[in-house]
Image (cartoon, rainbow, N blue to C red; front, top):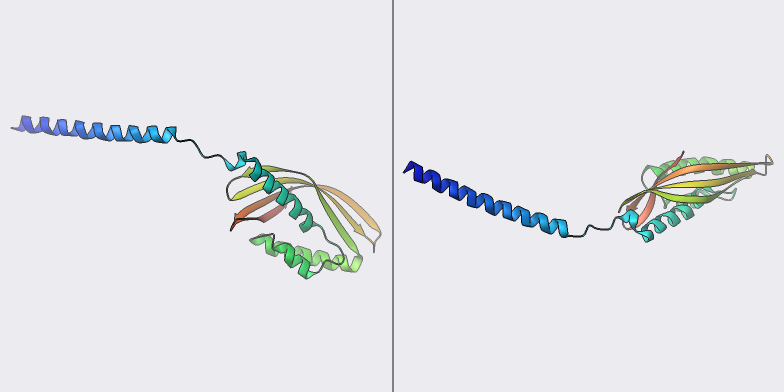
Length: 167
């Protein structure tokens, strides 16, 4: 009797094991044959959108004149999110105060930009910026070339800048 029970358990175990292996194999074959989703970084339209948005907005964010006021700064801060909003407001309020008293104008032109990383909801863009600072009060003009990494996040379908870091 013991011997017969052992054989029944063995046969049932083999049948169950075979069924599990067959199910697992079938599942693996269907997963393997399913096409992989296209990477966001491989989509030209997504790359172009992020680069164009970064280029246009960075030029606006880094440029100011003696006529730039707090309302202008607040409007431009809408392009930012997170800590970048407060950092931008603080920096620009001090810069615009100096700009008004010394007649300082800063003009920024993004010469080139390229995607460093891009996913469905985050991006990093490396930009090369030509910057000219002119002061009518001091009668000075300085030119600088900067490399700036811009970090973005997609929030509610819109790309917003989360960080601007000079390299």
